[in-house]
Length: 238
Ligand SMILES: *Cc1c(COP(=O)(O)O)cnc(C)c1O
Image (cartoon, rainbow, N blue to C red; front, top):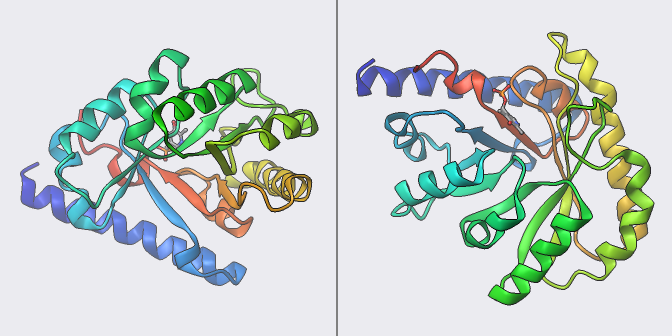
């Protein structure tokens, strides 16, 4: 596809996603501006990536740190793009990742959380993260088990540089979006518990949940960030 028709097709897809987000907001009495659309660019070629900021797709998510570093460098002249890491962060990649990201969605162990705290102290930065929970209980999924919530609290109370801004989950993968609903409800209830336990600390308000298959259900259940890849980019390349 040439650049012009690519741009048209991306615009059309963005509009479809926007229309559905608005409809889900209307159904659940929510405001569009309370939801962030994160465009997931993993495997998306650079030729497409470079078109995104002008289409208003300014918040971009990558699941692999090295790919995020490379793509952030490619768009480094654009001050209107923000990167989110949504996949596993290895501890030896923390240092280089911190300066590049607005939010890390995928903190899935205390060991990683503490390593990020140490590193952000060293770099003199504040870092915003989400805690990933395994709400589907699938063995293949990363994340804290829901029962671990209470035992996390002392560690969270002692953080000085890392701010826990909310929770993230990947729901069970299923063609039927309704299968995800219990996972989303569980994540919302975990956020409620965590907020009560942490009191005012951390401003723990985000729920990063919902992907192409189930973002409308996620919005109905309170998602503040939806992570969309295939609906925007599927079949456009490769
Ligand atoms: C790939 C990915 C997404 C996007 O998935 P789609 O189904 O393509 O929308 C969202 N979140 C994470 C963590 C991912 O790895």
